[in-house]
Structure formats: C-alpha cells, structure tokens
Length: 369
Ligand SMILES: *Cc1c(COP(=O)(O)O)cnc(C)c1O
Image 1 (cartoon, protein in one colour):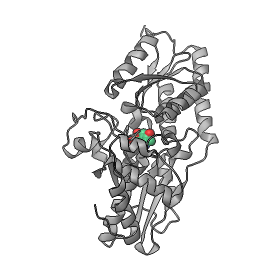
Image 2 (cartoon, helix red, strand yellow; image 1 turned 180 degrees about the horizontal axis):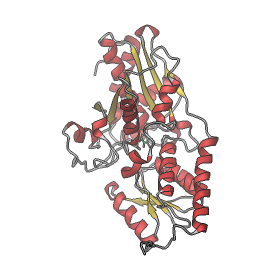
Image 3 (cartoon, helix red, strand yellow; image 1 turned 45 degrees about the vertical axis):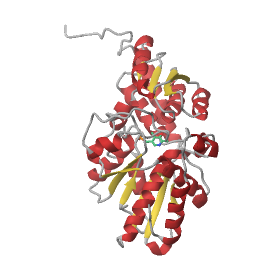
Image 4 (cartoon, protein in one colour; image 1 turned 90 degrees about the horizontal axis):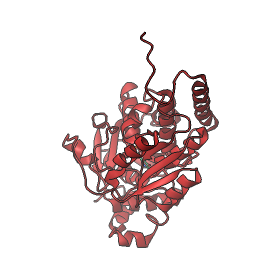
C-alpha cells in the first residue's frame, strides 16, 4: 500500500540503475575536477582613461565554449532528476555549441546523443559533434528545432534536454564556482574589483541570468547589459515587456539571438539591453584580433561592441571603473563565415563603417555611431 512503482521502463530503485547513476555522476564531477578555471584577459585601453576592460575567456574549456559549463550542469540536473537513463539517447535543440559540449558529456557517461540543428549551422560545429560521437539531425526551419527534438525523444524513449527551458535552473546561481563567482574572484586584486558593468549576450539566457542573480544575491552595484543581434526577439520582448515577442528568421550570430522569448531568459534580472547590428559584431571580432591576437566567434564580437560602447559612455561621463565581457567560443569554428569576406558580401554585410567607429574610438576615446 502506498508503494507505487512508476509505469516506466526503469525501476529507479533497481541496484543496477543506481550503480549506473552513481558512476555517471562521478564521471561528470571528475571532469570538472580535472579542469582548471578559464582566464580573465585584459583588453588593452589607454591607461589614462581610468577604465579597465576584461574578457572572460570561455573558449578554453575542454569543448571550446561557455556551453561546457551549461552541458555539465544540464547532465547533472538530468541525471539527478532521473531523466537520463542507461542506453537511452539524450536529444538537444541547439545552434551548435551546446550540442558539441553535450556530445562530449554523453560520450563520457556512455549514452547516445542526437543534436537537432538548423541547416545553416557552421560545418565545423557539425564536425565537432560527430567527432564526440554525436549524431546531427538538420532542419530547414530553425523554429522547428524544439518540436523535432521532443518527438525524437518521444519516439526513442530518450530525454530531450531542452536547454532553452532548463539552462537558468540547472546552473547553481548562488556560487559553486559558476561563471559569475569566478569573475569576481579573478578581479579581486584589480584596481576596480567590482565591475561597473558585465556584458553577456543571450542564447538560452542562462549566462546572463546566472550573472545577474549572483550580482543581486551578493549585493553588488554591478549592472548587467545583454546585447542582442539582428533577427532576435529578446530586445523587443524586453523593451516592450512582451513574453510573446517573436522573430521569423534565425540569427546570423551563432549561439545568440532567438526567434522566441526562451523560458530560460530572465528579463527581470537584466538592467539594460542593446541592439547590435550584425556587421558591428563582426567588425568588433576583427578589432579583437588586432588588439589581443585572438580570433573568436560572432557572439564575442556582439559583446565586445556593446562593452566598448559602454566604456565610451563612462569616459564621456568622466567615470572610472571596470567592465567585463566574454570570449564565448573560438573563431576557428567560423573561418568560412565571419572571417570570410565572400560570406560577408553574400550576406550584404559591410563592416567598414563599424570598423571605422571602433578605430576612431580606440585612438581618440570618442564614440561616434
Ligand atoms: C550559448 C552561447 C551564448 C549565450 O549564452 P547563454 O547562456 O545560452 O545565453 C553566447 N555565445 C555562444 C557562442 C554561445 O554558444
């Protein structure tokens, strides 16, 4: 009496399942234990500006992007909730980076992995998913990734990870060495250890939610800005307070900008949003390479453009302090896109005017756009 068994294929108290579960959690935790924290790099600005700009380099995780943190959290959440089960596939709707990291963790614990992605996803990311043993299921219309993922999971008895719903809640936002805690630790010995602004772009919205919640929880004065690319509805949804906002084509900046207000995006936690033209994001990427000799993905450019614009505002207002943004993933995934002039021409993107704004700003301190 009162001793119900779920009408499912797995008996959760089965010792064999519990042994598998323990071992899977251990493997994911051991991966975290083996890896080091990511660097906080400086973006060179004239010393006398009295403003320091930092880049949290998330491209150095074992799977090359900030999605390594998310994938680890989602796997632990799914395992501890009893959602991921031995021999059953994990399925994800992704524009690529999350799928690369999840394929890695799926292989680590020995379950199959299927990524449902828009056909426009960069070839290099598809290759990386397959390299980690995952399978790619490409769709024509980016808006269908959610339904296709759910039905693949239903048909296979697998688990639809659903990053766009669970990213914000799978991450330990109060600490546990999350990205925000790590940034503040690394700033401790700087001249402005409490940043005036942290700039984080949004795909799932998980990173900006984690950072903003941590700021509020720790009672810091830092403000959080989320820059949004073209073809994304986050900016409109946030400014108009409209949870039904939508856009009808996919973002050209991989990893960020969504066609619907994702459940994992927490608008109320964010202080400011900024719309950034795609050509400006790419101009900023090229400027990053000139400044620190590193190539990064498109979303890093979106964040950097916005962070530099904020630095310009602080300078104009006579304020000193620090600003932090992220290197989200490496540029070698996009050599045939953001670093290819024929791709830019084919997309009708002219980065020259924006490169001019950046060069002028970095030499004179005056922002004119
Ligand atoms: C996912 C992603 C982001 C945004 O992070 P979220 O936590 O999902 O909002 C930015 N850049 C890249 C390359 C990404 O893959």
